[in-house]
Every structure is written in C-alpha cells, then in structure tokens.
Length: 121
Image (tube, rainbow, N blue to C red):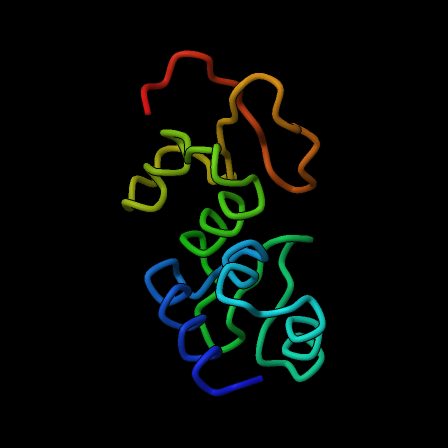
C-alpha cells in the first residue's frame, strides 16, 4: 500500500479513537485485499466485519463506541447511553449502543441497537 494512502487512513482514524470503517477505507481507494494485508501484518485490528482499529491506538470504551457506530453505518447515531460513557458519566453501565432508523439491519453482533423514527438530520 502506498504510504500516502496509509497516511490518509490515519487522518480519518485518529479523530475517531483510532477507528475506521471499511467504507471509509474504500472511499480512499484502499481495496479489501489491502485491508486484509494490514490486518495480517498486525497494523490494523478487525473489531467487527466492517469496522477496524489501528493496532497502536487505545482500546477503550470510546473506541468501542466508535467501532459500533462505524459497523452500524452512516445512518446510525450514538445513543445517549453511549455518549454519557464517552463523556465520563459512570452511573450508566457501559454498552456500545447505536440507534438506527426503521428498516436498517439490527442484527449487529456485540452491539445493542435501538430504533428511531423521529431524529432530525
């Protein structure tokens, strides 16, 4: 993989707790084979089928929320429960939770999914 592509991928991942989605990588022109090689080399870790984390980044609750959001897709939103945890409120038990509109897939392994029908864009 060209160094420039890896640099662009890092620019996307760093503000997202070191995480990125397969769709984000593909929009940069990174192929599935290139992602598989990054995983095989240990540079990138696969957290979900479509969500990855840079191996040197911190694996914490903030990263778990990002990975869940990235796996769920562009139409998902992070729920208030997950947002409270990211902001340090400890009185809510931690679980990666995302909300999806009706009709989107809800069988995301390891991720609790809520439904929404009334969120504004």
